[in-house]
Length: 246
Length: 246
Image (cartoon, rainbow over all chains, first blue to last red; front, side, top):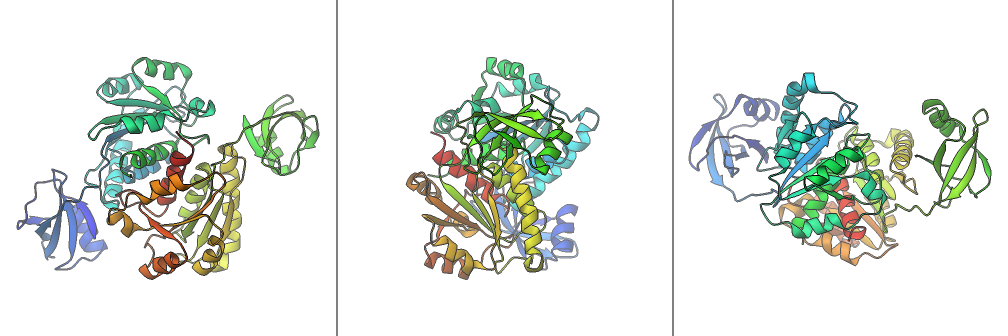
């Protein structure tokens, strides 16, 4: 069944007009006809089943509520040093599938990419990728994609998190293998976790030390060197294994 | 430090000519000069440090042996129903970074892609991607990439494995959340695990039942629907968390 975000209140029995975007995709591309059903997520992250009742006007009738909830029990924010071109798109798509709540891009000292002029446009494009990946993976939430000017801005936001971690390549090289599992055992449902990943060139030691001074903890992600776009996917998979599987 | 596969025996003190490929990359692209060091993996998966002693001829001297071993304690084979174009490349690159030993592509009933005519050329290209990803992630082994004609051929090879699993979307929908962690606790160093992932359209129920009859076990990978190229990455990350971290 297709899965769309309606982002307005929904109630069983109600007839609701579809947005232009959903009409285009569901009616034009997928050729839904009267009686076809799809899932629609309301503004409270509740999932409903809607049935097409008017093809011309694009109107659905909400026929059932579901209890579907596929969200990670903890709210994970992935923060990435600006990666090279194409990688931000991959990170947003995959991090959305793997359950991230927020995805932040931030320039760090060794970021080769510069976004400042085009950040707004880039974020708008990445937000669309997040929506489409959230539909595809039947999420209850579309992750929010944001751009921060620098690590200081990130630290301010991170102050509210319950756990702050840095995936630091040197930690892996030094054989750090216990903190991620420890973190997993310390998490409670509803906790907020923020994890920072360096760009291709990694993070500078001084950046890491600065972050450590504000409560960030360095974690290793296994002994192999992961690319900048792979590390967040490993981290999210690990959080899923440690918090959702038993 | 750069990391290359020499695939011949190496001994400390010995002088060794570089292959044309390594010369091209290390000397031409990265402009290594006399005295520059890199890691070289021999045919026994041992890592050595080599120092450039002759730029003209491309000759290194092996100056030290290391004890570096970044391989997963278990040998994981990832088998994928033929995915759509571009995704095989991503799977090979990321599965190599995440520690796979073997990566198999196999047509399944609902594979849209057909490789039969071009399989040899495709596999050669994917093998190059595996080599380059293995260098980048400082692996001791280059994963082998293979094409199998059908699931029957896969089952024959899988008979030798210690654990056989299928990542089946319906398992996730039915809330299967325990088998992957169970699998993790049952693994011993040196065990061989084979995991099959469906193509975009998934696996047919009959295919799954056939595989179950030969000892494959269905596992869920968390509640979100993962794309065909994301599921193997989740699985490999999970195996790393369950077997390498503590």
